[in-house]
Image 1: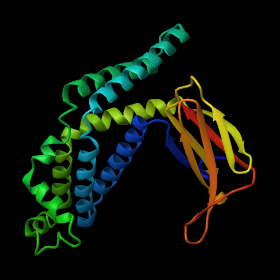
Image 2: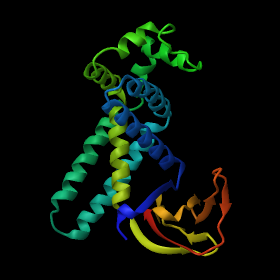
Image 3: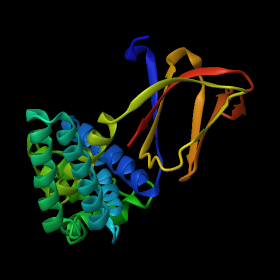
Length: 255
């Protein structure tokens, strides 16, 4: 079956990786809004900037990023030793990891501070908490900004997220390396459930592929010993119901 025929679900196996996936999702959302030309999309991009700044405000963020980049660097170095000969792709990845690590060490920790210090943004944020609070009669300065040419607005949106750029690059690289380590197997969930022992495996992500037409919803939970996958079927009101059939699916576990 081709990948285009499958729907991918990704689940974190730890709280740290939950943060990485959330941050990546917000960064992708911002990129899409920013790439559009319409004013409504650019106003939505401002709201996403607030979400990115909030998620990046974690006090332990820099340590988590540095430690994970170090772990990935050690894994890449081990692969280099296994090959026993120079590998240009691995060498480039190692250089990228080292570069991003230095950038994170120098900058992250102050991520989003310029956003929090921007009075105009904070005024928009305050008004956004009110339903319809950013109407043109409430915020004529926002209305004026939204009337500016799309390229001008886009340039300013990108400049507003400059302080978050190192975090965005680090999270993107970490998840790219995690996904590149995916080992995919064909599995069957008997009575709609699969239980796997993961003792000593230290998996980062669980990836579940299902046929688009299956209309099934997977749920994954994990600890350092076990990983559970359950499948449910949504009804017309989107309420989930347990499945008691054998469900074939593809499972990818990332280191």
